[in-house]
Length: 417
Ligand code: C2E
Ligand code: MG
Ligand code: MG
Image 1 (cartoon, protein in one colour):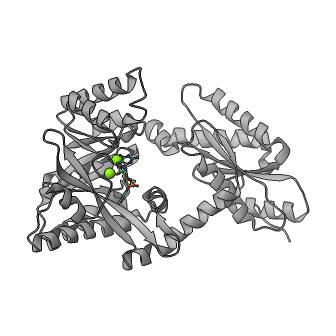
Image 2 (tube, helix red, strand yellow):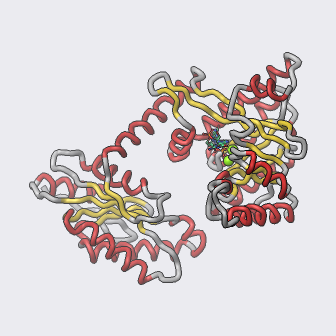
Image 3 (cartoon, helix red, strand yellow):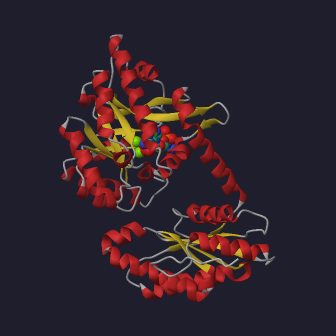
């Protein structure tokens, strides 16, 4: 039967379905030694923002041209946005990936462009869609690892995928059955050494898998755009904990809650917090909103409006993990924060680093915060030496295992008294 090939209108390469069909036939015809390679550009959205969509389209066409010339157009496809997939002989796969990178680099010497590649070797009996997914998983796995530009799929990645699936399938039941608990970590005022507030941190105690760390479930929920459901749940729990203490006539402290920047897109997070605050009759100055610095430029306006709305209503807004990403300084310029939380990596190697470099970086960033009239909190304090130094240069607050790990609210107040 004649099968009409459908092409991607921008690049003229195969579209997803035609490519899948082509790959299926090639595998069924018994061709051996094949590799699927999934390509994705780092920060393509940022490129569009910076140079405009026309230049973005041109870049995609260039990539199509490069892939077509190196792998042949008959074996290359654009699946969506900046996602390209090719079918090639496995023996030359890595060499060809290097050639692609060099070619792209030679066309854009002034911009840093990294085209990441994930490689998977399909067998003739397997579902071609799953095979492509595996190449994509390999490609995604090096998103944050800038020292390599290609990666082969391996089985541990399947385990990671299974965990992700479990998290997504069980979020509802974890929320409904309270498998997710909120713990509180003390924050200490360095002028008097007393606990002045707390940070609410989520813990998922799964009946099947045991404790799942936020480092695992938060990125998954963000990736699949479900994070707002966890955050709304966390907010409700914090407000209820607060209300219960108030009802019992027990003392309470301000609490900071972590929001994902995606919450501002996925729901009306301001409204959700307002409802919880109203129902439990919580003074707004008792809540701090923590947002990580890794905000990307595309949703700058939405986020900025959100931040201003919170501040106008009397909530403090804090920048979390300052210094952990690439855009810290820009983020400081573009948004208004009440407090900056310095990422714990500032303190890494602090006690060993005889060159004093870590101290210079910390104290100069602190001066900058001072100039901007923003309070400074250091995260991840673990030793008395670190604490003394932070005090000596004038940090306002600190948080870390030295003062206490995340714990139940009652335990916090035991150490307050
Ligand atoms: P974060 O907001 O920067 O929270 C601080 C993390 O550092 C916590 O990890 C805390 O347990 C850990 N930590 C505190 N002091 C020390 C120390 O002295 N040494 C070391 N090595 N670690 C310390 P945790 O609870 O695993 O949370 C990880 C991240 O997950 C948080 O980083 C936050 O970004 C995110 N997260 C946690 N709960 C929520 C939540 O309910 N919603 C959202 N959106 N994110 C959350
Ligand atoms: Mg935080
Ligand atoms: Mg932090």
